[in-house]
Image 1 (cartoon, one colour):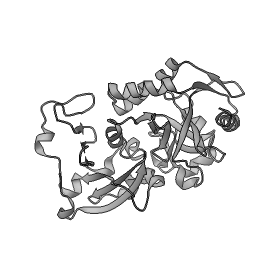
Image 2: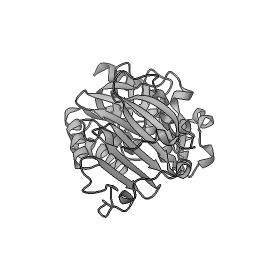
Image 3: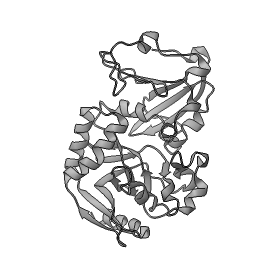
Length: 328
């Protein structure tokens, strides 16, 4: 639909295997695509064995390339999601905050992501690059993105989810350098039909309050100059090279709960509790529609749900989760 290569702005090409599909990311402009795509490095591949989805990253500032003028002045727009309404079978989403514009052409497998200036993107975007792009691409499929963490052993693992402050990140970080492998602690891709969790991002995030519990991670924080305004970012694939897992089958959904007790244990919980833990934050952050909500609820209805009652002795979490995965 748009031919950028002939305009001599193409600066890099990167290949990734994500969620059972191949993605070819083509960057246009003078920004550092390596820096922007850093959190996806553990999913990179040297070649593709099937037709890839092409994602075109376009920096308007350095190329002068902008979305079509009629799109920028589209009269019907959803103020919540930024969706251009009555647009047809494809998707066009405008974000006035960054500003950025995403156009998804499902039939041709081409996605166009315009950003005014990649250097000015907020930390939550650079820690989870192309988050909205992947959300929109997988939206018509059975798969979905959600706000959760993932830990696995070999081919099996668990999903950890809960609102901010529930203990999700603390539980995940306490399992580094153990038998458990890290799939992510913020956004995960789930394929409920195949019963699979896919890793998306290698970045672990720490609140300043967590520094005392994880002093060994502080020297690894890549954005220390932004603390305490932002969470600290640690690239797990770079600092813990053997600790990443890219996919696993789902044994259960766990809701971390900080108890203040000494010991950690696991107990069953209701499906409603799991829905309350997973759905609202996923919907709020990703601006998900009702179809995505129904997919998450159906996934929860088919998956065993438990609470991870996390005690103050963080060293107990990894062996208890390991035993849980092996026994269930």
